[in-house]
Image 1 (cartoon, helix red, strand yellow):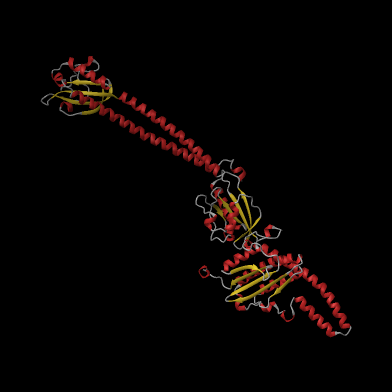
Image 2 (image 1 turned 180 degrees about the horizontal axis):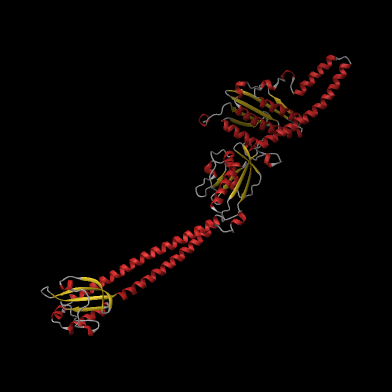
Length: 550
């Protein structure tokens, strides 16, 4: 649908185009009609005002009243024609109180009676009217001519032919019509451009299709098991963030699609490790990052198109890493069981031979000694960890690591103080955090001890777990090569070992974050003889608030 959607016709676009064109045309026609009516009224009013002003000016001209009173046509006619030619009016007629013309544009009509209403002017009033005279229909003004004593001695009529007024109106309307045509053309052109823009932005889709796509988008975003972030190019603002991304990043809610007001990763409080990696322009492909206490598989791609936004996907590898760790532990147990089965076969053969020889006491002592060796204890100190540790998950982890250590030719010694009562075990989250801390510290210590064992100068790891003052203290010591930079060891990705970078350098960083979240303490230093590394972690049984930590 998206392939052909941008090429096909759209009824939505056509409707918008027609609506915009009709709106533009109606607006231009209405505006033009109003302007034409206003222009006509203005021109007609201007003509009436003009003829009145000319008539008043001529009636008050010096000497005209005397010439009119004396019926002196020789003086009146030139004055009237001079006024007509000077003002551009159609005619100027001067008459006596009886309406007899004393001047006219056509001299042959002098002496004839004025055609039009003049009685009000003869009575001393000013009159403006439209009347069909000898020259045609005209707008005229008739004003009285008064003598020195104020008596009406004659009248002046000044007129403008309607034909001339109509010509002026026609010229003005032609200009208005041209302006309206230009406005309509521009409006139609802009409407067409707007329709093309709408078609391009909507990919030629109909409203119902856009609604369906939006609903599908929301459904897909909600159903995705991967976190999705869309970052605006240039600004880095979050345009889209689905609910899974909000969960993985420990944010309160997803971000709805927006471009202008979207928050930045810094404003959202996203983990600095992810912010710094996304700020780097280098490619990000299946890269594992420690974000909070989660291992996230991060990918970043650039969207092709005008916006060139960045799409970031997040997948939770925490559970996968846990399963991988359990699988490795299971493989270690399997190897240990195969080794133990072989050893048991040899031991049972020796015991069977002693019994056949009648040395039952020797057979019993030999079996007890091998049992103690198998459990890794030293005489009476091999107390069952499941009884000493009230945290079953932690006890199982330690036993598993002990088996793994023996399988790798190492020794995992459990300190005599190791014990944890039910009252100090805490809740399920406390147990999970202890397992995370102890497991990662033991893994790191066993790897370090293995390096020393290969060099022929060590191979021992010591573990001590006990409760003190409402907290559980974990001490893990190894006789490995030690840490050259203890502070850097807790940086995500830091490692002294070569291998899969996605699984190296994350254990100690995760330990640091668990300790910080619970408000605990983490100390690291060298062993008593300057060899190896000693980690001491204090984990409160109950998570402390920030106020208590301060």
